[in-house]
Length: 538
Image 1 (cartoon, helix red, strand yellow):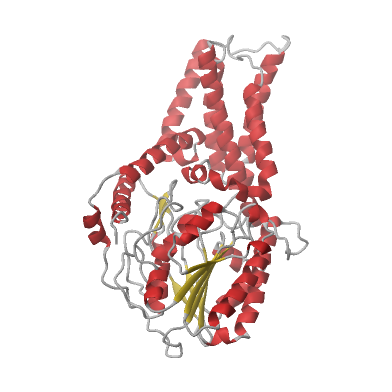
Image 2 (tube, one colour; image 1 turned 30 degrees about the vertical axis):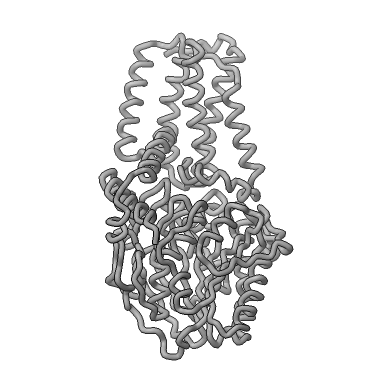
């Protein structure tokens, strides 16, 4: 291929060069987020292939030109999502577009990125290879197609184009699981368990029916608490006075699945339409005479409010007059103030209570409206430090009140922190294999507890409900997919498997391993049976 540099470059040809140069720059920039050169190498290989196909097609008819533009658009869109979100577009992202307002903290850069990608489509272009040697072009095309086959074999999750195609495969599987008709009664019997593991005896100094408070923090990976910079000093110190669980992973993503999955130790596909109708932590405690309540920190979010109302609590507590956070949600200061007042009010009654809360202030893209970390220049560190300070104020009140005499306090999270660009920049030493999956905290405390650290060894948050009930010495028939973390020998096919609409990953023995196609089909068939069991009217 020869280029006559004496020939003046036409404006449309220059536009084509600029378009692909920007794509190259965007591809290289993704390394600043992922810290993984494989994304860059695979991306550049695919971009070279797209460059040849693009230039062969745009000089033909308008339909082939549209195909060429769509191919480049998919590539650039995937790279833009990777740059901001540390992963390509996933089915989970698409299914949570309705919660786009929750990204308000970074909405401007996201919109600017979208505009840039769309602007590249409408730029006037002209083919650059029309005078090139056909043999050379054919040879390059053959080599790049062979490289694409190799990528498909071993590196397809790093491929922007193939990852986009995977969305359609994921959606087909997702819809198949929704539509498949198994026998509900048989499926229900398959998951029935007569009892919960008895891995620990309830401490003798704990009353027969202690109150239970569960704090589920939005998106909190354990590495943030253990960080040497003391981003969350209160929680780091609090862990030392608790029963804490090491190597404990989230079982799914995002919030709706995470909170419900922990309370029911199970899955629910359409989280906002109908509750899981099987046995839950709150239903067991209610049967033991507890009053159950959950605090709604997003009272203006109709989807979330409907979701909470379907979880089977006696009462959903909110305070719409004190909501000033991002996306019409409570700041962590407002949330912990409501938790404090609600706990004291419930404690004034003789009936034992179970009170849960999901705090919203550490959501991806948010900054702190109250406390800031250090000089306040890092939004990511600010929001976690602020959350820690709000927890500290609540903990001081808790320990100095009568609540501490008869209440088990449990601190955890709905799921791991989403590893977007802000997270990877703030915690560059913390390497993640998946943006949605990580080790998360689970701390159990009461006044007089004997602290200890228990290795969960890769088991996940499906184990939350059976672990809490085991600690309280409450046994019941159940349909839990998880097991008590106090029993180190217990296990199921689910309690070391991360599953959402986009990923299926084993965390067994703390080793992150993406499932192969046969394992995926086998696992999804079990999930299908579980979903079918939910159709039984109980």
